[in-house]
Length: 127
Image (tube, rainbow, N blue to C red; front, side, top):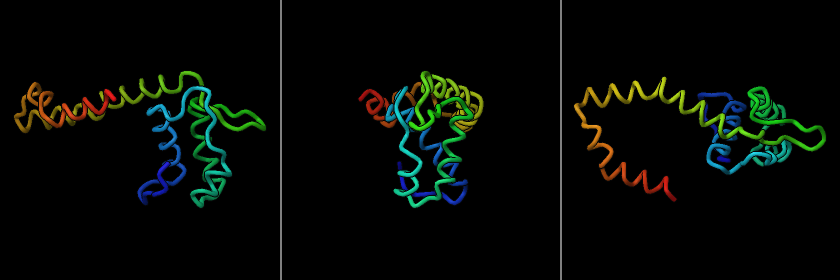
């Protein structure tokens, strides 16, 4: 996790988002334990209650399970659910803006897909 915190959003929310990113990127897989509240709090100099609040959001969303005395673990299917939710969010919120920008600038979608930037991003995703 990146130790830099942004002033625009509560730290517990940023922590939650970082764990979500770790799940989406495959750093944390189904059944994996999350770093302990104490370790995260100590490593990033955070109040343990802040860490717990971020983790609790993940529990409330059904992405993580609390196992008493053992810690918190990524639920089976968490990545699949997150991908579904992120795709839906992108298609409903981000894509209309991207599409409007493409149309406003008169860009050709086929040329965009064939551009060096698109190819580099595609190569990166195939690693």
